[in-house]
Image 1 (tube, chains in turn cyan, blue, purple, yellow):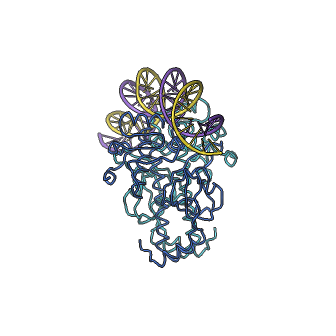
Image 2 (image 1 turned 135 degrees about the horizontal axis):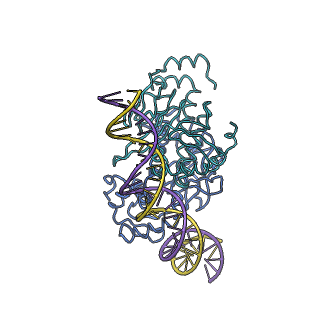
Image 3 (image 1 turned 90 degrees about the vertical axis):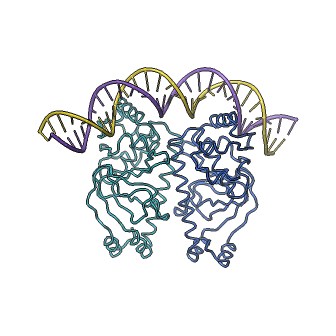
Length: 222
Length: 222
DNA sequence: CGCATCCTTGAAGATGCTCAATTTCCGTGG
DNA sequence: CCACGGAAATTGAGCATCTTCAAGGATGCG
């Protein structure tokens, strides 16, 4: 994408590859000063923060290939914590290197801004979801997003493991655990999917897409 | 804030001042290519967009002093429309001038980024509101935000006109008109405020702040 | 001054929440 | 490797909140 081999190798030289961390361990916490941004290599991560009353708020789920820690790039302080949902390995890109490189490589700068504005668009669609959609639509939307994300990364989008707990899902979608659980069993009774614990197999993707309010065009080809 | 007189006059030279527009007229529409960003001089504005099914989604309300149109600064296409809620006058800052100036005035660049990240934080608090709070808490939160915004601009935060309709309020907060209306009457019965149509007088700000989940420290001083 | 829009209120119904009881799953230690 | 114990998930019953549908009243713009 407009980056030369030389530039790429300079970026590569700066990346720190880490040993995998285990489920439940965190990479950074809300309030930490921003030292680096992180790219997920494998596994998955949730970002979340704690409210004044002590309750947790899940801010998002992140798959391999995604960058996390960009949210607070200008405040110099992380706005949320990042916790591994399963064994996860990440790459670290020290922030001062990234800053230096992005002045040298305009395309990199632009790419970062693109990712940020994508993040904003995602926030907006979440707002829409929370303000107007039912429990079933919300869960369908999440499944759709995960499924599409996996397919883009050449994993199966029809059958996968949900690394996050029902609790996290509910928290993220503004629902209780019980409601999420009931939606899953309702989806199974309607033969939209099969769910055995965390193992999910989508059966009627068309119906699910419609529920999710998503264009099913680019999705349907298996 | 770190901008010299000379820099300020260069910025000033570039600003286009417009005649007031009337209630219900729009400044730009979602999908328009971004030519300028806009600063509200007086009046108020809602930003909103249309969903696939034709329904409207209110994205935000904006008071004098705020910048709008920044949301899509990097996509070059407005993500939402902007409509005057009352007679409103604005200043226009052509985007190409702003780009040129912000390379010359680093502090301006930084200020713009600060405003963007503030916007992102606002999105996040809205997500929280929608996923966890009751109708009363949501309305209290909106009143609190408007009230504080007015006080920061040296208007009365205790007594003001709500320029937006109950419909818009409900749409923004993920509630129906009827629920919003009922919350207002409930608030009146509890002597938290007085509402005659769009004219609002806050009576028990402490209680309202608590409902809004807001720190009441910087707010209470009249 | 009149019509359209906005606002309010009521009654009935639906959706999702709370509380409680099991069951299943999974990591840990024996 | 198995058994245990705690956490996660499921299910049910009752309930609170918000929505929907319907009607009447206020408001304000042309």
